[in-house]
Image 1 (cartoon, rainbow, N blue to C red):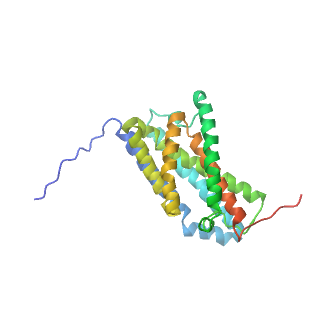
Image 2: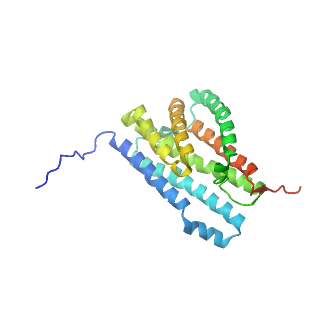
Image 3: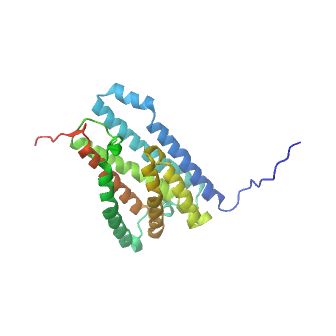
Length: 250
């Protein structure tokens, strides 16, 4: 007869604080990713709209869906299953004592990362994927939809990684183990975007986790990420050889 080693499957204090956010982060990112990459959903948009309209509507749908799948659904489950935590405990709050700290670091990081994003966005390998809206002719409406879509999506994204996946884990397993789990999953989500973004997510993830814990809120991570995304997206728009911006007449 074969034998197995004993496994203690009992729940210990704090286990759910680690298990639930980690599993939810994985599950809902998978749901978001494969929905966003679904060829059937994409085909539906392109079969019912012109190319430019389809591209705008499809990408905005993926951003909107990302907000709900990563930013809304996991927190609802966590609030139900971890009743000791409220929204403020996940970093969705304003703390007057750390407001100046948050402003200084947000501005400082933007000064650092925005130029890097600008020069990186002009590279041909970046233009293959960005801007994500592949409409051939852009106007003010598409620019607004693009900016809004990124902001909505990144709010959900950062709330998941710098809120749901960080604060409860810090309470249960400590700061550095929680950051290690956070960086590992955060970097892994960038693998489909290539080696550069995957490697770059490691130091950025570390900095954003530390600043989130120091400020007690997700706002630094959210605002810096939005600044990077907007810079990358609109720089790619400017330099993409097949995409044009059409100025509407007054």
